[in-house]
Image (cartoon, rainbow, N blue to C red; front, top):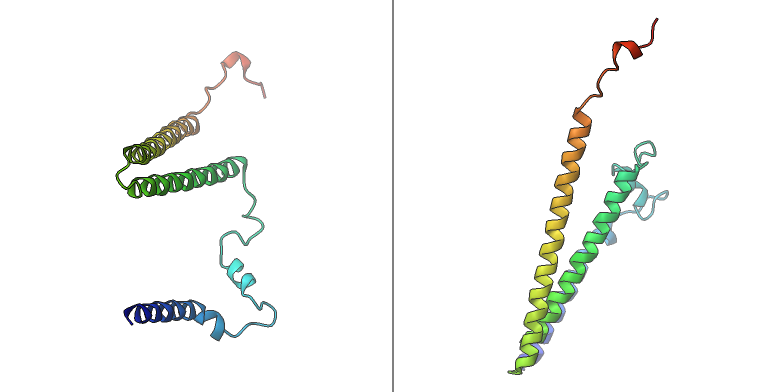
Length: 148
């Protein structure tokens, strides 16, 4: 009886959460020219203006690095879950415990090294950019200046 009660409560909770999440889409009145609201949403972002949506090479490289760091974070998450699962399901087997612990330690060391490398690279590039942008080239000697 308890199991049926818990299954019913969980099922109704999930159904209610699903209906709650869909509520804005169900009751919204679609506009005939933009039935899904994509144009309206796009017009409210800073990327909607074609004049400002052109990205420079450093912005593209920065976006690429951001995607790579996101993938690294995903790999860290997967390794952490795997190591934790391996450790928790070891059931007293020392080899499985050691393997799970080693996986967690190696994942933590790897993410720490990547974060340190990113921080160091960001610091060096920001410092180099600030030095380059604040220095002005020296004036040419008087003998090389053009005569009017």
